[in-house]
Length: 142
Image (cartoon, rainbow, N blue to C red; front, side, top):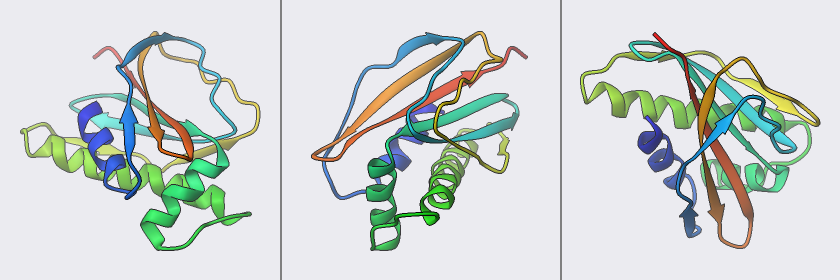
């Protein structure tokens, strides 16, 4: 799942990116200034969280839409990035015979604390000359 999400995110920008090694995170998570949460259901249950700065999401939007996205549209864009990445991830996983579905995105901004899971894997992804977006994968016990 994590590799599918990372590959999808990599395809959204022409700028060089560098992934860090995954690290274990325990609850609660205090994300950056903007983010998206997507639920995962089916054979695997959990949540995928993308968090970062408004600038990072704007640059990713530029890769998707060919123009920089700012203002109120940026919140909508953060949700769309979650949809695109998780949709591609679900397709990647389906090719391996595992069926999952994703929920509509929940966008958050400002000071937020996310809890309700035991553990998550976090992977910071650095976009050259822009900043970092963090992908967190919190799986539920089935």
